[in-house]
Image 1 (tube, rainbow, N blue to C red):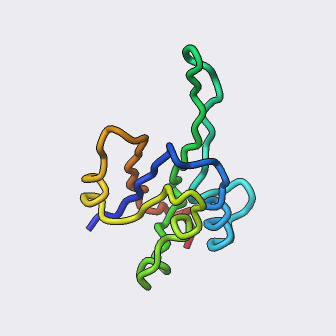
Image 2 (cartoon, rainbow, N blue to C red):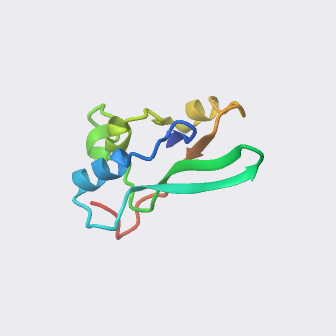
Length: 118
């Protein structure tokens, strides 16, 4: 089964807890991430309409925390998400939740490359 992350970026408020949890668990150096929260905006694009979102993005260094998931635990980023905007599971189950009404991203991280976290 292919596993994926479902990101509700309407709920993310940019606390970066997911980044820190990943960096701490995998002992990543400063400036390297398995997940990175990006800020889009702020800018006004209409009368009283603003673009201002925080969007978590999984990088090639994401391993999906096999040491945790094999023990029945959630990946560290999902476990520590303060906004509870990250979900992890089977890609087909998560894809069924895409309703076109919420700001959702379904991401399947790439298989770890040779430089990924061990």
